[in-house]
Length: 114
Image (cartoon, rainbow, N blue to C red; front, side, top):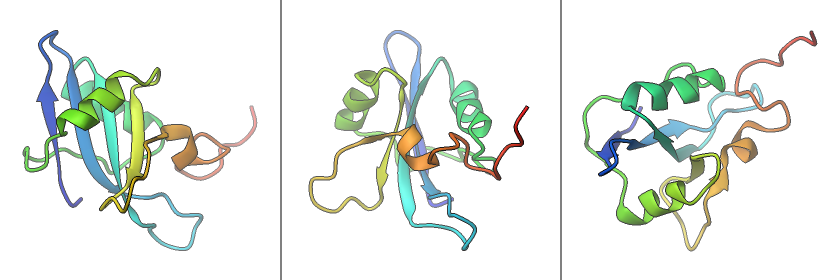
């Protein structure tokens, strides 16, 4: 993991920013992305990502906390989970996490039908 950080908000919730490798379609790791998560605490933020199939997600230190613009973006999104490529080039907008995970909605292998 390249870096990440968090910011505690006045209401007690946190915004966690992480640099992760984009899930690939089986051809190795993808390009790096910056992921933002809004949750009640740091542990829940990481659990939200792990539940989506991003298993090797850890937050070590606070070297790259979210910027005020990133905090505003994630607070105004209904899911509280956003991403965009890192490092940012040009005026790329934030994308919902579903756009990163693809049609399965999960970063891991395709889940069997129940």
